[in-house]
Length: 208
Image (cartoon, rainbow, N blue to C red; front, side, top):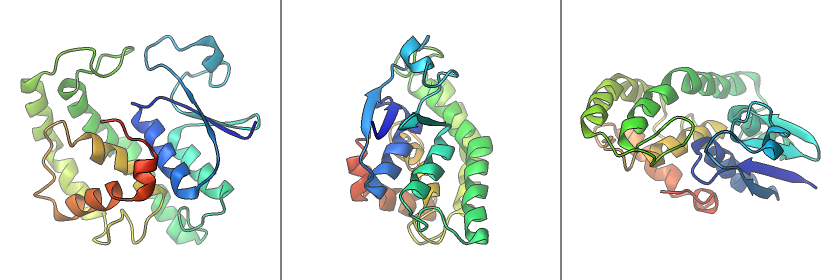
């Protein structure tokens, strides 16, 4: 069977894994999972939590997008993407943890009103709410300032391209249509341009 990625084209978590898979060149099959809940029983048999994505490697199932990123890099033997050196690896893990607990939730609070997100249904299920979007963008400013100070000036989150970049790229991409302005943040703007110009990003088939 080989590698099978269960994801959805509109899932940012699925996209980060597709980006990483494209960078590694690992051959894989994609199977689409609907965003609407309840998820199909066939998918719940793979991932009982029903979260997207899941990676099945000949019956060994890996869930949680950041864990999948680590697994893909390790399977491909890519210690440039997930460093072997302890301190370098810790920096990647540190960013992924910060992203999951602080950065991603703040961006999602903008996406919900800007892109009409309805829980259990997905994006585009409700009309955009301009007033709530503007308020959420204003609240995002401290997070953007935090990110600006965290990322390097080398066109990558850290000092070189790693799975940390795979994790962040989908959000930088999606917020090209929410009204978030990255131009005041030189490093973030440069990072966005660098990541979205990589051939593997195009190969990951981002959905606008």
